[in-house]
Amino acid sequence: MEDIALIVKGHRENMDGTGYPDGKSPDLMTAIVGTSDALEAATTSTRRYKRPKNRITAIKELSANSDGLYHPEVVDALKKLL
Image (cartoon, rainbow, N blue to C red; front, side, top):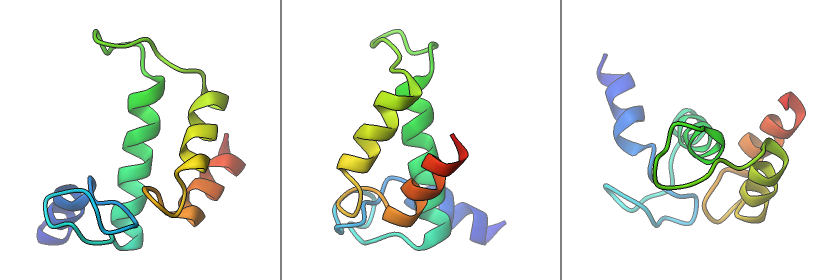
């Protein structure tokens, strides 16, 4: 479970080394979880503080932030899946 805990801990890290908790670029598995979480957060209708975005808009935003915030290969894979 330690390896899973490290992925969860780091899923808010960004590719450019910003983010938290450690301010370092995530490994691939952590980037997958972080990018997936960002997509879910953008498209879910259960957030009371904001309206959901459609998938196309959300993917465009992820793409625009690819390589800075999100892992470009993970974003490309999400595009193909969706």
